[in-house]
Image 1: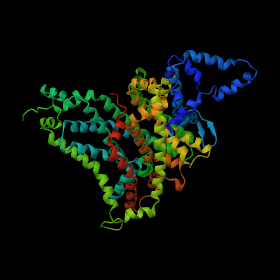
Image 2 (image 1 turned 60 degrees about the horizontal axis):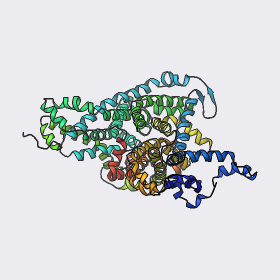
Image 3 (image 1 turned 90 degrees about the vertical axis):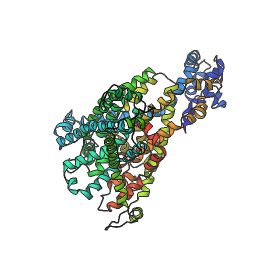
Image 4 (image 1 turned 135 degrees about the vertical axis):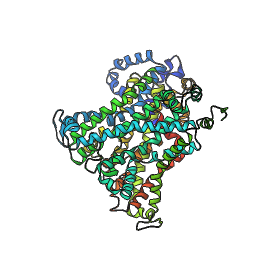
Length: 350
Length: 278
């Protein structure tokens, strides 16, 4: 399957060109694939362009010129570049057609009143409705805010847990494995599980928007804390233990060591945990909310993400849903810029 | 208390931090109990009789009759295996190219791919749905698989690019001077070396798709195409089915997750923690 990426380019090379190269074996490694493909001009495009002139007995201007240029620029670099372009094409097409195009469409539809069939332009009113005037909007934004506020608190606790594990407690390997157990649960199953527990132990809570939201937030962090503890534990494991010893010799207390000495060194990991958890809570817990209580009671557990689904696929207001999606995208991008910038720089530098 | 001789020994340092240690251990154990509580509730409840007290296996046997859970899991498997194979195939070679076969504009393309990492699926789900609907593709597996792979591809490309950047260029140059083609280099040298990376991405993608609700719910609406997640999330627990039976079904649908957890926790952690700058 993976080889198919190499297929189309393989037979297009001319043996003559390979012979013309200073380093024979370096020139067109494609050759190895189909030794029989050395026939002159087996490339379909070239044949179609060239054949009319060829019948006229003229040297082919186009192919001739590119042939010259190729010969001059040929060699390892060019062959590598061609190979690189061909084998990255599938992923470019995939992301282009199924990620970039729909996002651009979403931007367009966010400015329209779109019922799935006809779209009429409405300016910014969808955005206004999404964050100011839509039904239940105050409650929805408040719910999102509760999630946002809960994340740093949870990550702080998770850092303390990771630190405690790192400093050494009996059975810490077992603890680490236990902490990871909730991570393997899918959002939908976590929703079902917490709903069932509420129905059995405190059915009133499921009818109350405040307690429902609290349980939903707890369910969210129950599922994610294991990853964050393990990420931060992995970060701590890269650190020099002499650091704590030196700190304690200098008379720093444990809490001070954890926050002031190890904490700053752990910032990339804490930052990563914060941002991924934040983005997860903003954009990726549809399954949890759906299975828990369909965003209810009322708008009690509806976040912007879930409201997008309701606006679009329940109420048929797809323009409004698209606008909410764009708002979420902007927020996500702003949040993740903090991370993505270093990543891009790293690739640029390499 | 004597000073520990080895600072690399975690226990030794733990012994030093005696004053707060009991409290620390207590807190860690409490968190472990909180983590396991709901899980054990789920297991115990799935073995409890629906009518009253007492233990039974009827929830587990009944789930197969009351809910097409096996067909649901089969649908989940089709999507998850299809998407993970596609993602691995497409992104591993792309990562190799970005790392070792730079072409004009490769950096721009890679930058665009990295920036799509931040695009949430939920933001594109509405146009995505209508694009598929326009061509009558709602309710078919392949387009759904492609959508999953497209949204998981960015991370995988970055992962593989990083991975192949760590392979010395000399490996490839030597192979080329010895007359090997790129296909052969990829197939014989690079891919065998990259097996852990391929498995990591394959497993991560499998689980992401297996656990998904949104895309499966929207793109595969007909009853015989519903995934396990969709089946379980849409049955109104306690009405059509007893909650105990639903929990049994939920546990059953988590079997692949448990298998991955037991077999390759390190793969999962590697995947999750990849984005951290070292």
